Image (cartoon, rainbow, N blue to C red; front, top):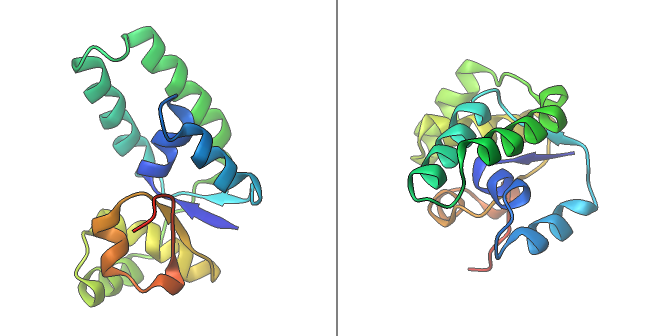
Length: 132
């Protein structure tokens, strides 16, 4: 089991230069967990792409629906106290702490391309999509 953050989900579901690399990295473990907030963050990514003219609304909805179909069964609400503890302990935002709390709870790692987040958390809890 692995926890996927929103950056990883975007690289996985939205075709781009890191899609193949991300899909290869995730192929070995298809038991994924995500906090429900992935939906809001993922929609924000899709809105940003639409505003930049990189996708139209039909394409954005198609990508979102595909991701939702795959990820909805993997959603899990992280423990509030653990999210707070980890956010304070590692100096990370609460939304990043939600992903970390799921990894912590399940004794696994967060797969991320977010270097700022990854740099604040011990490597034992992080798998980086992008090298340092």
